[in-house]
Length: 243
View 1 (tube, rainbow, N blue to C red):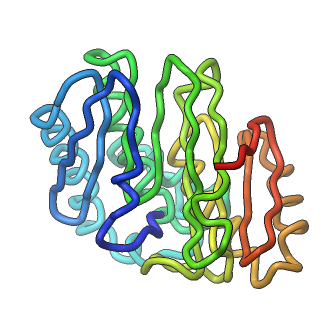
View 2: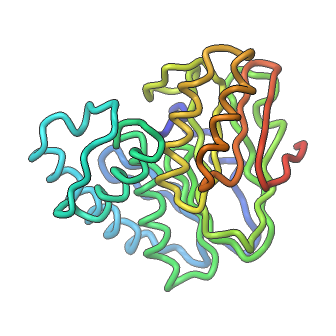
């Protein structure tokens, strides 16, 4: 889930030639979108639809919102809920750990018929469909490595999700103390859930290697990065570049 602070000043660093950036906020959902044109109306409609379905399910299912363990499969649930439940089950966490990534991806995919390139940022969790290489900077709170390294994204592997959890930044629940636990996966919902699970495995810098070893149990994880203070560990199929 989202772990970025308010106000979201990191958005001032987000830029891409040929794309227009615009903000859409509906209730707690606060998105920054980059596409070939300003599609605020279309994005707002997509967010409202997804939120209505998710909120209705939460209202009808006591315990879903607070669940810290995987939720049972429900074939009658809305698609956004089913995606969250499936992602969280793979990661071994509660379904709300996947909500930011799931919403970012569902909104992003709804725009692909209108724009060849789409980037949706939801509290630091990203869905990307790009045609040219891109670099995602890693925010790690007070760590001296914050914004000093980035993941180079191969456009041939997109669309994909890049999601980050933190035990030191923001208000989302984490049982670890990682300044940043970042996961790349083809599914943004899965990347979000796995980022939470990865961060939970990092109580201190000594745990970085073991936590990253856990990612090998999930072949869907394409890359992972953990930052604790001045320490960094990374695995996967994407290059880590200095910024």
